[in-house]
Length: 234
Image 1 (cartoon, helix red, strand yellow):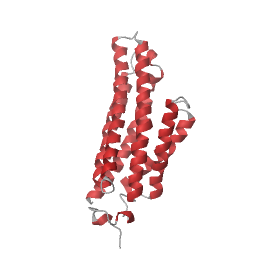
Image 2 (cartoon, rainbow, N blue to C red; image 1 turned 120 degrees about the vertical axis):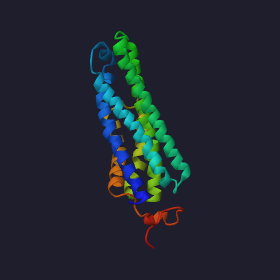
Image 3 (cartoon, rainbow, N blue to C red; image 1 turned 180 degrees about the vertical axis):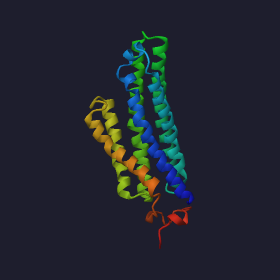
Image 4 (tube, rainbow, N blue to C red; image 1 turned 90 degrees about the vertical axis):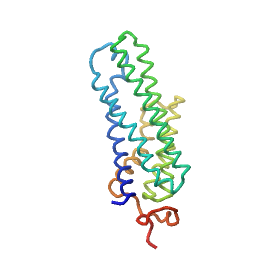
């Protein structure tokens, strides 16, 4: 297995890990987010929340790792945009980590001050905002626009696939801003539809890189530093 094949395989697996961790974690957090005041007034349920926290911590690591692992390959197309992608993934993960702290704060209130329902509601609201601004907006910039453009330009994956990122990124950003200005409701069908191309992009990218790896790119024939195994036949 060549070094670039190892990179593509690792990146693909990491993208799939983000799906495996993020979706169950959101479901596990619902008792806290749907009724935070009722949660702290009750008893139990901590282990489910802690499992969700563990999954989101793995998600944070996988998010950053996708960008770090892909950086040596993406920098051959544009070092500046590749750094931008790493930065976007870090910022997305910062928002996720802030949301984790809010959830843990609500769990602490259940143990220490079950009467602090108003504070629990505020922490749940902050968690919702972190989800909107991180996975709901910044992911459109990083995974959508930046990564989509780099993959489209380099042709390391099929261009039709990369177009999903270039379409999905702006849709995710627009839907997040629409929620911010109360044009649509968070979690509404309109927002759900807007996220479909981005979800399809990230999932298809994870599967493609894991199973097939990088393509021999016609666009990269003159790219400095490109390994022979990725250069197209002349």
